[in-house]
Image (cartoon, rainbow, N blue to C red):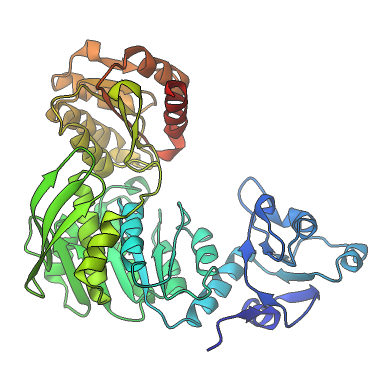
Length: 469
């Protein structure tokens, strides 16, 4: 079975122009960063809002790339063609469209299960759990980090070699984006973790967010879908759907195919009994991090494992051994039994609520929330930040430290709901937040650090942990 892509394939797929090089050369390892180029890589020039990677094609070749794919308007002198005549240079109309088309073609060469994952929150943690489960039996390709958009996803698929399964995360902030990614990925199993408020400022309603997430069905080769049945909009959609898909549900509150009972949350992990209502069996599961939202993520991984015929032992081992991507509910232990909960990668109302509930579960410790703005909420921003303020009080959080613009609404609501004003601190910068944390933290504290990624709270985490070691 053909799984390799050569120069001729690239030219046909992209309708590109061969400036120099070998028509039979295999295109295998792709890169878009000249700083990470390794010998024999294929460099793709990507043009963004503030940079133009096409301008660095010579640097890529000098650093060891054997070929480059660049936009057709990139100027190349005849002397440069002669200088790099032993290398392959291809010009295309649009490198982003080209890399998507090449990735789609590459994917079509593989007759393997491909799991596509989307949702408002929990995509990455669910992806990590699913990948860990399926890798117990199959050689697995999985999305790394946040490479889940129209550029990162194609580069992930282009890493396909001798893999037996792929786990691909899909993100979006506008209608039509998931549809595009799904048509490239061609998932055999699709997962929707939930429908929340992320990007509601752009999409205007949760109903539109549901519509955007359901676009994952557009590229499906098979009609196999796994959904969170406790999410209100997904549950309603499922109840009203014409059942044209093979749908597996998972949940805690609503009766579902995969059900969690007897949930016990410990400081660093959770246990629950998973009821498989389709197969009338029970599995005891241990998740390597605490929190109800990770029970949901684990149930989703169980549902995928069952669809693929994995044994209960393979599923249990895969979940227990999961290594979650950093900056997502990452537990860091400092001296004097101080715990940092690093959830600094991103934030929405739903993920804020889940993280605060996790922080509030242990009444024996002083609980400190270090929170920043949630982005992309548009006209709903004040309302949702105020909801977080209320949830801080409901979960008996002791101290609130904030910086940003919208968090002022959060702090105001927390004080209105009963948090003592002297236990709230508004700081003008991340540096001031770091200094405030250091000045008040003491033995046995538990400190949640969370905001949208653009707030760069991960720098606060790094400085606090470095200073404490």
